[in-house]
Image 1 (cartoon, one colour):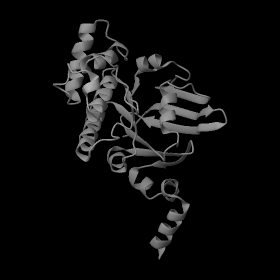
Image 2 (cartoon, helix red, strand yellow; image 1 turned 60 degrees about the vertical axis):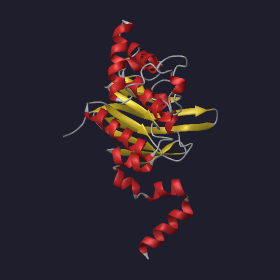
Image 3 (cartoon, helix red, strand yellow; image 1 turned 180 degrees about the vertical axis):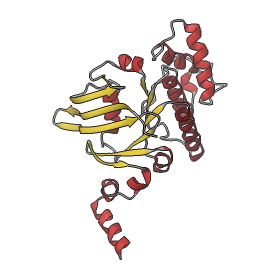
Length: 254
């Protein structure tokens, strides 16, 4: 079955002075897929997500969501169209409970709730979905790292996104916690949400992604299914260095 494009970027670039954090990147996200984004530190992965959701203004290029151009829109306008995201460094609203934090997402999503009571009801259901039940009344400052990651995900999900941008939701977690988050991401995807995910945990990103895009120095250097990407010499060189890549290739032909 051929999937339709849901999000497209043409020549997407983000400049910080002379630094090209994202450099003429073309990409397509297909409806219903999980697209992984990988690359060494400083490759431009988080910057790309920030440009997509409007947190950072695009320097050059065009973005299209469901065939309509969304280039230059503000983050709240992007969210209202159906694109939500989590952040690499979780950003809960301090002094508020977990339930209140998640309810905020429901107020500013694709179908914004007009009444706080309905937003709270929706938040309670989402908290159960991410397995944070029992933590509703706890102040966010008292949640541990894993719980804050789930909270960030829950707040994004209450926005009813068509596409969810995830930025290292598994960073700093234990192996068991990573497995739980992987299962949760797959569950969200099966329920109909398209996902674009950045992750440094290779086992996780290879295990959940349908396709993977590799960035290096702001440029796209590879794209394909996980098995193909894992054997790509240019990708191996980007992560481990040219010398290691050449030696590994020489050993494989010995």
